[in-house]
Image (tube, rainbow, N blue to C red):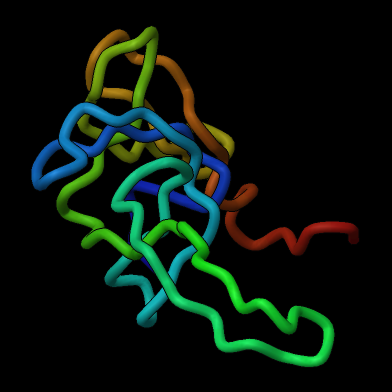
Length: 115
């Protein structure tokens, strides 16, 4: 899993044909190397006719983008991510631009969640 972005993050595509597109990460594929961003890298897929859909159809869907080509968005601008360990031992992702906390990676060391 990539460390700087996670499923559900709002990211901006920084390079490629979809450069500048802002969208949510729908899923992580290829063991964390690629992400699928809503509305970016749209591909056309031809679906064969079936009993439920005898006409067949053409479907537009998002394709995967390499994780190095996306950046988290904070206050409408792309930012890099830093990792900070708090005094209680919990590790959090923090935006390099502005210092806003993005997500807690895990709780204090030595304590299991829910116990």
